[in-house]
Length: 255
DNA sequence: AAGTTCTTCAACCGCACCCTT
DNA sequence: TAAGGGTGCGGTTGAAGAACT
Image (cartoon, rainbow, N blue to C red):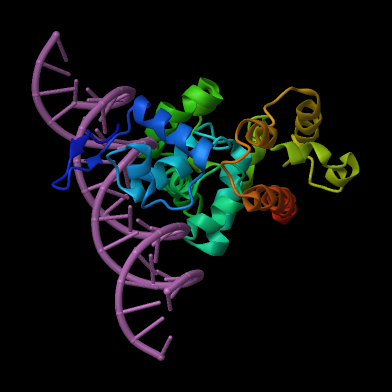
């Protein structure tokens, strides 16, 4: 699903990146950083333009980037933020640690836009072929066939939380510092949010389950490749994301 | 089984903004 | 203050693969 590589009139390679190119770019940035994207490809020995290198690094090669496997809470967060901010993908991305603007944008257009549109229209018993198909094809692989068989588009918006579970992969390390009492401030109607316990359990499971400490990874493996600001920024973003998830939960309808 | 249609998403493009000179 | 270069952002494209007929 990638563009076939080719060379433009200036001899610059376009299209899909090869593993070799990825390795070259990654190794170069690990060693020398990326102070100047325009000069970088020439210095690194890549036949790419600086913008292409930047995009590749930012969206796929950065050590803390998460790919695919969107969870329901992330979907919910994106939907909410899009409602507040519009197509400010970069702003939205700052609230979802590890996610890039490009990926969020794609995810919105392929999964969430249709879902949200459907939710705002009267409930239909008819099957939305395209949305159903999308969900069946992609998310079935990730969240299970059982969920995929349901027509999620016809469900009330808040029921998206029915499968609410915080996966270790989704949750950054900062989540583990949340106090349990803070989570317990969330109150909901039992019939709507019978899964609250599940949610709390998920947090607790999350504390006990092993996961990759991405920042640690960065700092140990890529000590000189990233500006310090990126770490502090991402940390604050993580906390913002936590706040927002709490806010989303509290703002949900009571029935 | 083969052809067609649909869906996805990595990557490109153009524009706007920011910074330096 | 203007000009030029670099970077970031959002919209769009297009090829691959899945689903459908």
